Amino acid sequence: MSKVDIRICGMGGQGVIMSGLVIGKAASIYEDKWSTMLQSFGPEARGSTCAAQVMIDDVHIGYPYIDKADIFLVFSQAGYEKYIAELKEGAILVYEDELITLDERVPKGVKTCGIPATRIAQEQIGKVITFNMVMLGYFARATEAISLDALKKSIVDSVPHGTGEMNLKAFNAGYNYTAE
Image (cartoon, rainbow, N blue to C red; front, side, top):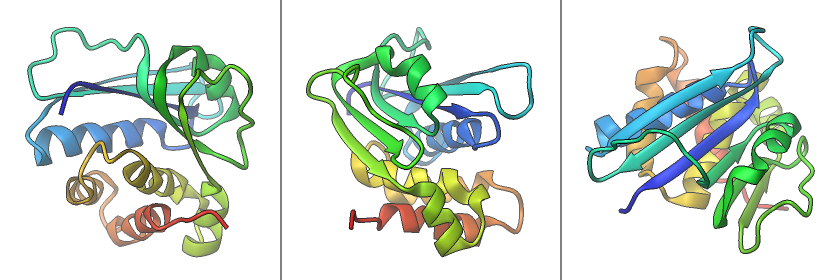
């Protein structure tokens, strides 16, 4: 695998930072790759735009900042607005299709993959808080950037004690989603 630059963005409270942590841990601990994660968020605890950037490579990463992302995982319209210009041509854009409206700013050749993650979390899991795990499942299927096994181990290792089964159920719901 060559270097993969992943940007995750959304609003505080949507699990953006946790998603970056799960991806980075899956790569570094369970796939024996090098990874870095940087996070940014507004001064509010919830509701402000936040982002995580994860870099994965087979070799040591000397500069952990992403200029243009290979994979863009978007949880909110505000995150899309702020970061769409930082996506490479030919990248993969995974987004919540009931919260985000794409426009002409999506670079040429970008593969777009939308999922109604909020609805799936509510209807299949019964908890909207699992929205980010639904998104991670769909990310896993759409990108194949990290193995399923590594992501599942990382989820169980990262989420609060006692919530692993619920979070894996949400992950699987996202992974198994097919457009109707």
